[in-house]
Image (cartoon, rainbow, N blue to C red; front, side, top):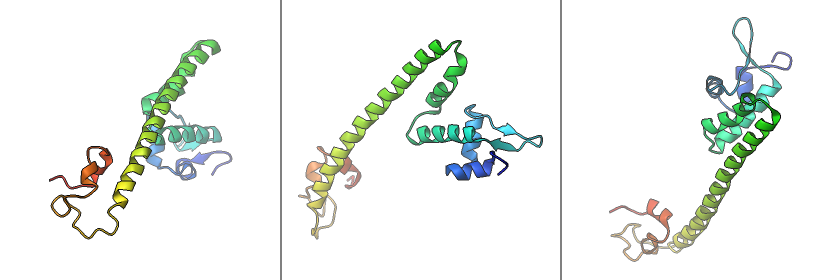
Length: 156
């Protein structure tokens, strides 16, 4: 570490990510590190905070295009008013996407709980877990009702 700056490996370690990821975000124009005369990349606390925000959004499934749009919006406007309105619309779009995903996860949670209740009915069963070995299996009888069970049952 040099003062309040970090070399790329140190930044990657601090952020629990890879050097390659940091270089990728640089290639995508989301971060511009300080460069020494010898070309060494250095990252300040502001860079670390920006990378942390980028990593959080990517880990939560946001596309690079969406992150870039948020990151570059302010610098592409002529006034705080214009920036504010455009950023509000962009963040509102992100929030709509999040709310949709939350609903999808809630639905999946209900389905997983239903699947667990059905699978528990097989506790103590000595039959082979297949259509042939257990033709009256409760899993078979719920394949059309609980989509997730189609992943655990044989396909023949």
